[in-house]
Structures are given as structure tokens and as C-alpha cells.
Length: 27
Image 1 (cartoon, helix red, strand yellow):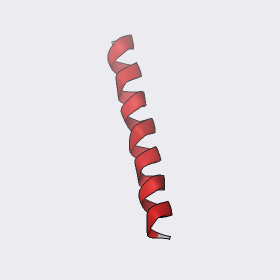
Image 2 (cartoon, helix red, strand yellow):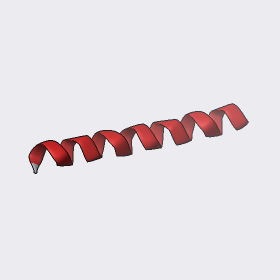
Image 3 (cartoon, helix red, strand yellow):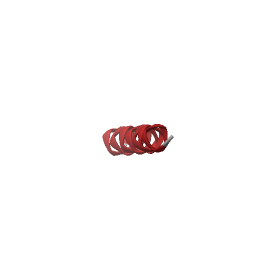
Image 4 (cartoon, one colour):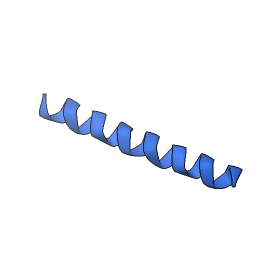
């Protein structure tokens, strides 16, 4: 359960990070 939560958080942060990178590229 804890591992799944950490994995989920990691995925969310990864997607957020990729989104920021895309915004920086567009700007």
C-alpha cells in the first residue's frame, strides 16, 4: 500500500515535471 502510494506520487510529480519542461520549451 505504501509502495503503491509512493509510486503514484512519483508518477504525478513526473507528469508535472514533464508538463513544466514542455511549457519552458514553448515559451
